[in-house]
Image (tube, rainbow, N blue to C red; front, side, top):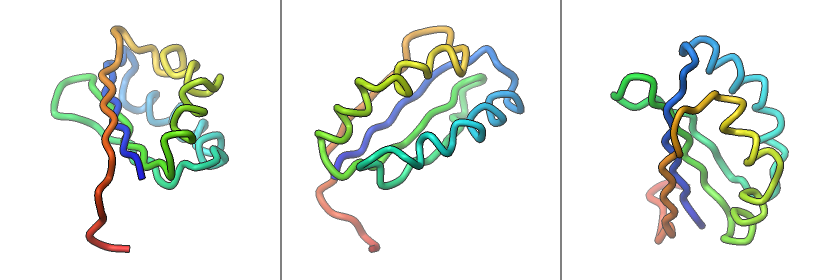
Length: 95
């Protein structure tokens, strides 16, 4: 499994950002190979993120090339390039 962490800074008020995230939720639920996505808020003002769990590097790569992935900067009005980290999951504590 693959873990992808994205952090982004948005100009949107939190309520509007959450509204847009909820509207887009069905699109993310339909992505092949996406096992889980966590929507998160950091302790930095205006900084939010997503933690994705993928079944394979191929699923992640397919998503990264999708229109949905490319629409994130506009959808959330991000004001600088996001921080993205990719990690291999070695094992999980609970199943």
